[in-house]
Image 1 (cartoon, rainbow, N blue to C red):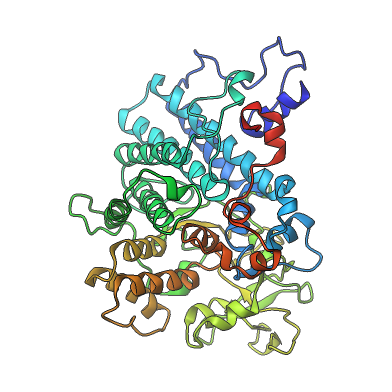
Image 2: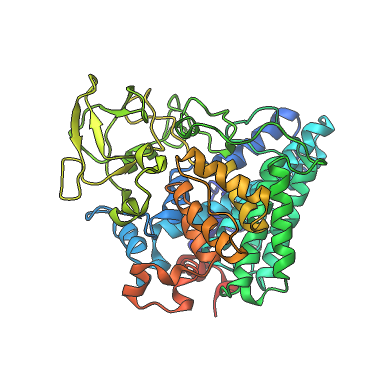
Length: 512
């Protein structure tokens, strides 16, 4: 009985029970007549679904799982066992790994909360446009969580409705990737249809363009997974060329290249540092930005993600140079949990501003004199660190640094990869390269070489934003990670993480 209750806590997001007698109705289950009574109730419900993303165990996992198991990051020698296991690909830990368990758990909490909105909102008396917007957001959130569950675990259980009884917690796995992605894509198309385009980016919320962006990513994942023979994807009943074309189509909508879907809200920022300015939360790059602010009362409402990237220096305020300008901003130092791998740092071109402006090898005093630096042979700074997450107005450990969930440049590169070496695709990648201080990509590349160049550009542009592992996975390149080679892993071991053993124990449908 305790196991069943625990499953509800993990999957349903239900907060507690009135008693341990299963004949009594568990607190938090939805009843058929429990519709939202007002627009305020509906808004609170959709906010409740969004709020799952900011839970500490979820928000950190989004970044950790996307970068830590790759060449971009490593972790400190005394890091938690679960983090070390993911970093080093120690698969004997994966079924009981706390990071994976929490990611799985909170994804389903978010899904159940989105399902509640989808089920209950149609009965609410409120303006149709507002109802449509909230419904679209709920469909997006359900799709978003299933997409990243699939990116990490492959086939996962499908809950299309609210979990209202104990029996409903034992959903079976999707039968194949076709079933799972048809649901994801169907939800996102509904979201695109129902939601408006915001006039300015809205922190922590999504609109029509976010749905189009995730559709582009989902179609590209299918196209490349099928083309490259990735486990499960290679068996999909999908045409690769059609999937590339669908990725291109939805990326064009994001970029305003489709006259039927005009938008002037999102676009490229010209200045790299401006993208990562915490006060620029309405910046054009921010299609979906996690909502966190230093004024929050508890972690999740505020962020400590900057502490994870910055090393400990001496416990005092440090100052960082602002690009090429003789200007400095302050920051706290940190815990040094997410450490840039030297081999990755050295793989940047020396004049790439994503290296010189966004990765720190020197810190300063307030007067601009050097306080400490990193060198290949040692230094007070133990490793060159990411500065995409810096808040000069930090309040102790409390910052407004926020994970970037969908960024415009990501989708521009999705467009370039899906499209191939056309004039518009070259234009997209060359803007990103020029902004980084690099020259244009070599002209006249064939489609294979062009896509390889886009993949390489994505690695540097999206570094530290929790994206790279998913690119490696869809391109069937996880086998090239050094730690995967060192562990001697086979395809079934490295392609997807296993579903947590606790979930298998508690859900009869997941047992062999």
